[in-house]
Image (cartoon, rainbow, N blue to C red):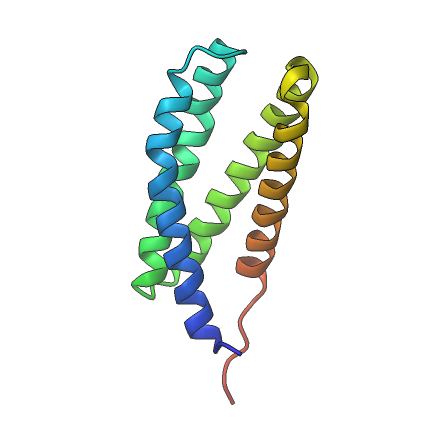
Length: 128
């Protein structure tokens, strides 16, 4: 089993890579001509872009072993979860042809966000 410090660093590295990869994907998604184009533009720029930038900052802080990295990670995960829950439900209701894959992807994404949020919110035990 991984030590708590190694697990923190592993999750921070995974978060950094995921957020860095998600930034160009978000840009392509925002400017695509799909269903709900205006809503996608607004939600992407006003909600998901700040969450991804905060995620990159939090991951860098966590990798640098800064205490504020946990707080920024909690804020980033909370913002991403709040935005994706609202937008995801609207997407599932208004775009019927995408319900199967979107429902699966959104459910998996929400589960991972909640698990990561719980992990970073639980206080770490100090060694005796």
